[in-house]
Picture 1 (cartoon, rainbow, N blue to C red):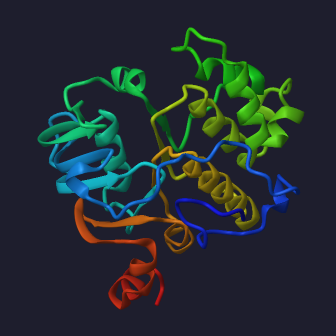
Picture 2: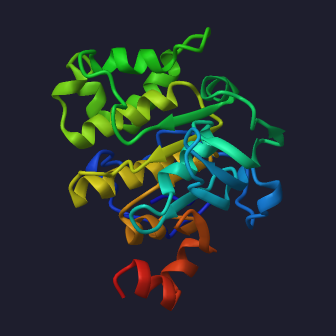
Length: 274
């Protein structure tokens, strides 16, 4: 992979899957990657406690943060509150304590729709495309909040995911699982988000497709967009992560860089199969 101001040794380095030339399709950000400073992070869900509706708390003083150009990964066992933490940051949870801040602005009280307008792109695990619409129509729907010319952004999405250009007139519901995920991520990028949130983007796809999606996620991060991602494929996700959060029962159990967590004996034994 080409030199990056963020991280040069993470993830799958085989760029031949969709981009044989290896050329970047999106412009690298001038921001250099800095060590994580949680309180001043670009996006932070800070000391979040809450649950759904009037139900019991699922998150307990949980903190998740990511800086510009970084990939932050949330991992942990089933039922640990990973997707719940993501939804809390996006405003889909009844938070009883804590705050969410984006680029220094407290957005705790904003609805998910208002957070999208502030620059948050969210790709849920399921129901994330319009199956009866074409690929291109899905991308156009992603730009619904914009009033400017979207053609340049669409070209960037097609450069990032070349197969979508080939299938742009095909119904999205006819695509493979991996291609559907590309549509979902592409649609979120059409909003020109300040931060991209992905809930299990590789769920149900083959290992080869997973590597391809992770390569594209790295490429998006290189443009400076912070990426917050929930993943069941913990080992592979931590390999590309600048920052990792291991949750257990809605609490922060382990926090560190991806490499630190992969090397931690307790994390390896408890969550990575030894």
